Length: 213
Image (cartoon, rainbow, N blue to C red):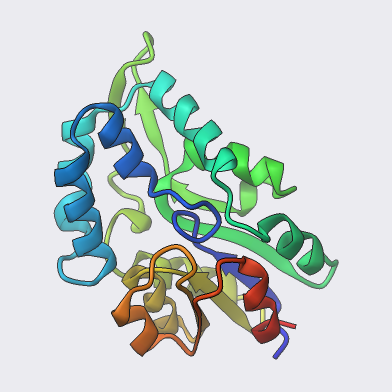
């Protein structure tokens, strides 16, 4: 199949890490936070039930977000650069659609040649001294069903869309009429195996190209 719009999750899809878990570990809260993230990604709890809870505990400052931005790039999944170079064409739109923190993801997008307007994630706000203030609580990506909302918006002016990701929230894109490719090269989730239209457990993201072009 050939798609007009190609959307990628970020955490455990473009990068090997889960950003919120890394921030939690940095604050000494790692184990409990990982359990919450897994519960959301496996569809056991609604995303909105834990999103505010996690950030209010971690309260990441600007320095932490800058640190995470570097880590996203350091831990990039094998084959990501090649996938983006292969798919970049005038007739295709590439997007990152993530429930992660936008300011931490933007440098990775820049590294991949993607403009800021193609990054859909949750904005985080800081005080003047760089300390944590809040996050965009109105963002659809901070709640369940948010990825379907973004995909619907992107499909308004395009014919076909594919979403590539590792979690239950990525499967929501099917509600918008998207084809979903589950990527289990970092984390292999049973719920994604069952619900994705296609599924790959190869460690390299290049494996998804067979279902896109």
